[in-house]
Length: 144
Image (cartoon, rainbow, N blue to C red; front, side):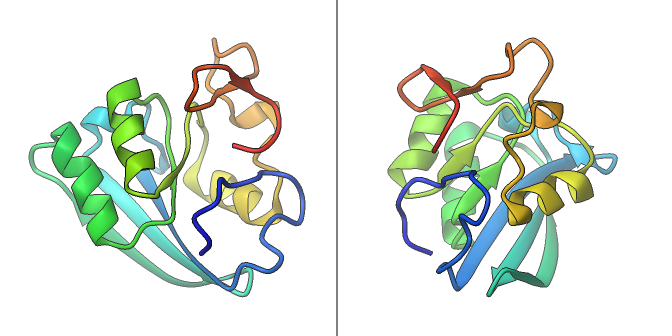
């Protein structure tokens, strides 16, 4: 996947042939806090279709090792709940696009992402005023 910032607008996957998405999970939902997440789902997308899923568990989540682990797995996009700014910065520095402040059932979020509908307020963590944080700290209403 081109390492440009991910746009969540409908049709954004057009032209992207391959992508690996990482999602921290807890009981079938997006894990509420990425920094301490222990379970991950990795989904490979090719030509706008899911082709592979793998899961991984972490014994001791530590910020630097979380970022390194995702980079080693060739992750293109991380969809997560709350994330500390230093960890988000580390991930962005490795070329991983971060879509933070996301909540909901994993399958619904994944489907919304692939269809370009993850912008829906239904997937934003309550209390985020309907906005996702950009890496510069401002609210995001368009491309991430």
